[in-house]
Image (cartoon, rainbow, N blue to C red; front, side, top):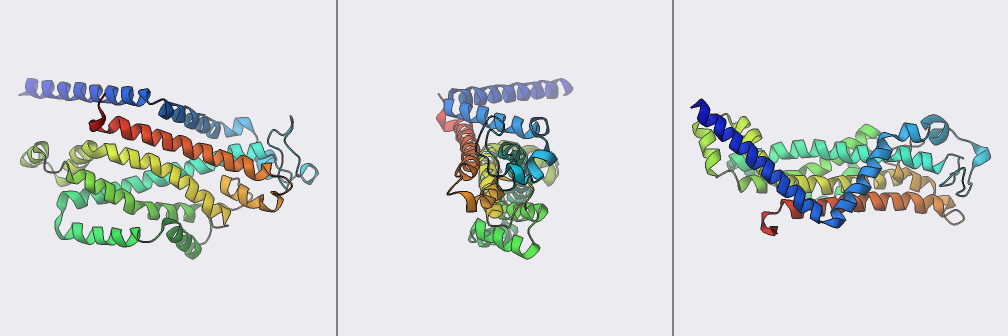
Length: 297
């Protein structure tokens, strides 16, 4: 029996490696997705190394009226803002904030929505009906409106922004995970795990979710881009990250009064947001195609 189990485990590991290699091969064939991945990794490296690129306190936070509103030059590649702070330094440190918001809110939403959706699809019945109707109610409220309401009630801060964005994304993950779980919950290996006496939580975590991971990964990738845009939008209207902490959205907000005479203050952060979101969307499209079994080539 031990030999048989060992052989089965080796076969499963080999099949998993082959599947992952096939997914990577298909993703690599999508040139736009690869370009998006390279661009996004460049943003990630900049965010991680922000402290080595520019000093946070002296260049991104401290006001320097003598350098205010300088146009792009060799000394200040992206110019300076109305308070004399270096735009490049603020964009670099803002990348850390914006990308962190996108990743952490998506991760928490994916975990919460994944567990709720998996339990809903696995158990069904009254629990499924009640939970799905609750998710329908939340989905009927526009994401930006729900986020504004939550932040307005709790007050503008980094933590409250994370809470608002996370809550607004949980229903979408719950729906997607539930639909994915429904396609695998009746498979023979799930029944075999039940017959062997495995607990429901173990079956959901070890058997159901890993076999429904494709749509979850794609949704998570797209969600990161949406979260960056949502955080920037809330910061733009004063309900997100508060100045002087640099964040792409509040950089746009602070630069509105100067945009006629100093358009670079608005154009550069806007381009950065657009490129980062576009690169993540390209990655999501590539993952969707690579994980779709109907697109074998």
